[in-house]
Structure formats: C-alpha cells, structure tokens
Amino acid sequence: MKKTNEFIFKFTLKRMVLMLTGILLIGMCVASYRMSGFGVDPFSCMNLGISSFLGMSFGNWQLIMNAALFLIVWFSVRHCIGLGTIINMVLVGYTADFLCWLFLEQMGLSVTFTLRILLLLLGTLFASMGCACYMTADMGIAPYDSVAFIITTYAKEKISFRVARILSDLTVIAVGILFCFMAHHSVWEIVGLGTIVNACCNGPLIQFFRGKLEKLQ
Image (tube, rainbow, N blue to C red):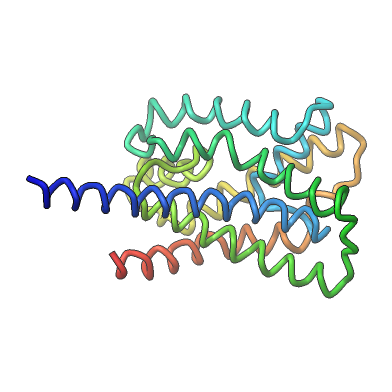
C-alpha cells in the first residue's frame, strides 16, 4: 500500500508540474508575442481586439471569454475539463499582463529589431510546447484549446487535430481584426507575422511536442 501511495503521489506530482509548466509557457508566449510587435497568437488577437473595443484590460476580458468557452466545452467535450482548465483560464492572461508590465514599464526593456525576432521565435516555441505540456499532463486543457477537439469530435475524426486547430485559429483572427477596426485601433498592433506563424505552425508543433513528451512517460 505504501509503494502504491508513493507511486500515485509521484505520478500526480509529475502531472501537476507538467501542467503548471505548460500554463506558464503559454503566458510567456502571449507576453513574447505582444513585446515582439509582430502580432500576437490568434486567441490573444481576438481577445485584444475585443478588449480594446470594450475598453477592458486584456486579462479581465480573457477570463470572461474563457468562462463562456468553458460552458461550451462542458456540454460538448467535457472530458477536456480538469484542474488545468481552471488554472489556465485564470492565469494565462494575467501572467502575460504582468510580464509585459515588468519588462516594458518597470525595467524599460529596449526592444530592438533583433530582440523582436527572438521574441517571435520564442513565442512560437512557448505556445506549442506549453499546449503540449498541459495536454500531455491530462489534467484538463484551456477552453480555447478544446475547440479543436470539438471540431474533430463533431466531424467524426474526418478532420485532423492540426487542421481543426488551423481553422479555429484563422476564425478568431478574423474576429480580432473586425473588433480592432470597430475600435478604430491599428490592426498591426495585434495581427502580423507572429499571428500567421502561430496560426499555421501551432497545430503541427503541438502534435510534434506531444509525441515527444508521450514517449518520455
């Protein structure tokens, strides 16, 4: 019994660390994209566009949007919900806000063109690695990341995860652009090279990193 309890503890602790690492990486991803000035990831693109239109902070609006998506996930792919879902809903937006505030406002970081390129590359890696980490932990995934699973489920697996992810990413980008225009803000503040790279590469990279992590289990 003691050995069994120790195994369960180690297994659960490993999953917790993997889940929290993934969520931290996602927050770092959003912050990296925002500081790069090359556009943010698709979901953040939509939320920044809508929050700008509403005059609300990014973190607060992201939490509201995640809560709305949570309800959809609850009635469609409930197996995707877990502790990681709740933590992701709350922490990602505020982590990104905090990191941007810390590096740009408090530390006065000078974002050179070379640094922007580096932040773009890091943001892309953080996004896919973060998603892969908490998906592999299997403690629940972010409501938005569940959208691709909803598509594949209702398409009866005729649409692969990577294609479903690209479709959902392109849709939220369009919504973000629409609200940015309505808010009379520059679209290039939220949409750019980073947005396109993330939309096209995130699905395949998530699948790649998940495969690597699952082999280590």
